[in-house]
Image (cartoon, rainbow, N blue to C red; front, side, top):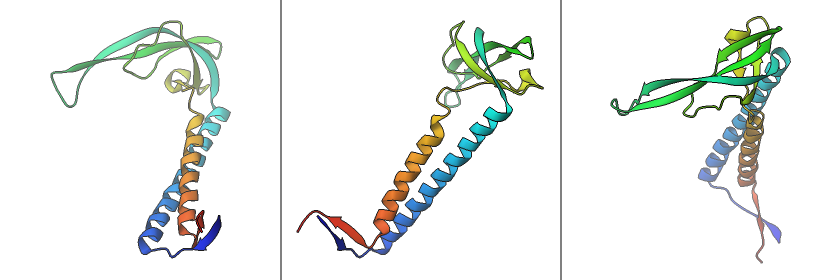
Length: 153
């Protein structure tokens, strides 16, 4: 196993440069998303909430106007500023079961208007972006190097 000189073609350099740019964009996006999450954690209140009801609605499909799809939104109750507060979550294709515990973030001055359910996997998004960006950067830099690692004679 040794290193041997390697001549890069224009196509190699171009694809590696594009991969490097995309990797750096993913890493930058990871920092941006992480900063949003940290800012929300510092400025918004977080409290447990409970699903107390569900609201359903029928939506027409954009591809087939005759087909209707039923979606559900949970009604969530939580304690804000000493008062029980309710809000309606986002419409999804599944129904949340009554009594399910969720984490709610809200602005103390306007709890009803700003409340939202915190996704439990929210903190993994920046790490996924860092990982994908890091892999793209490593492979792109490896392609740009004028040497290759060779296991042959």
